[in-house]
Image (cartoon, rainbow, N blue to C red; front, top):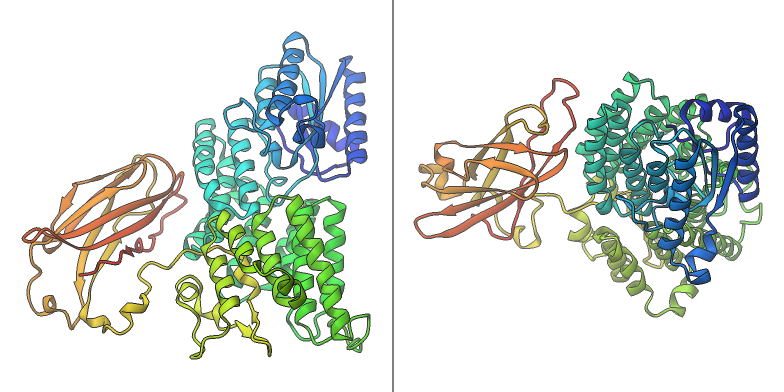
Length: 596
């Protein structure tokens, strides 16, 4: 089976359909998409002598409960009707109007809740041809090709949509199930996309090193199976990691764009063009106005609302932060942006357009950031709504983005007297990124662009405010070391635990007491023995039973008094298979409030 994200020429689409028996078309206006599907269906049906059956998922009517039907009932009716047609005889079936993101938002009785997955399931044992028209396509989803493992690909598509929405929490379980499905099917290409999405999810959650390693693995796997679009997407994600670390790499975005264009992936090229423009937007003399306009046109051509929304967001952000020049020599103070008031009004229009598109695309992450920047750049808008900060916090909170909430807190509080960033930001973002935080004369924050690319969690071991007055040398730390290569499912990996006292700690000049280290797995894994003695060299065997991120908890106790001295958690990434001989970094412990 094959997933085609955009309308290709008729001959190519027909060949794809005849080879794979499944064609999914998205990223085009309704009339164009429907006409294209009909043309393909007619050609195949005429040559093969097959009847054509057409079904339409009426998006607006069904979502509003028209004719008494819930969305799930309407979707189930389409699947059941198609199932009946397939059973009777071979034919050509056209299902148009399937909602965005492989119908992820339409609940059905299928195993993974996707209308597209239900159609594929009904189609699996038939000799019929299936054409599906999607009303919209989003970043990542259109790049995922269906091929022989329907459930795995449908799960990957849903995970990509959750990442697009800015809710990576929901993507993890879907990716674990997708990896298992692709492994069972022996689908190397599917595994490569799963590793890529794992890396993308880690980037969203601020786990830079983990994301970098997985994205490099994914890129090599894409090269091994000749999947150039995947190689381009992986390169783009790696470039976004560099931007977050304070060292933007526009050349890497340009290379990703060239790869996308070489294979005809217009939507991938549009995204790479956007991030290349964002990476250079603040350079003196860069023609950002022209580039943002070009990017917007690219997204319009492929009907990508999410891409258009982020383009408008960054265009408005650039406009609101400039002194009147659009980056073209000799245009300062011209082009309708010379006056502060006119520039502000134009930025407001762009923010409003972005906000509307984020709401249509169901992307709360983009909506929250646009609301925040709009409020900061438009005092009138903010003062008209006394609860503006609470409203934005609520949207960030809905997707578990505590970092976003911390930026709202900063916007309300203003700059600190000592010039240091608040703890909630310092413990989540690299120093290089926070060093680019600026302030306007009105004490409004100029939040770094890269801050909105991630939703980072607190860094393990980052000193809390109460620890800063306590000399580091007077504390004892727990050190965890992974002694074997990257863990894979059902293969034991050794973990060493040490208690390392600082030079000012009493244990630094005396032998360690007979402490007990208790190990607990917080996921689908085994760890034994259950207890170890750090003074004797505590070593544990960790055996995961599925790929993905696994959490382990280690509790260090004093058995003489029954006191818990310290409790740490570590996250270990388990990949589907070992991509090559290299040694990972040690799992970083996550300390609790209790310390030795």
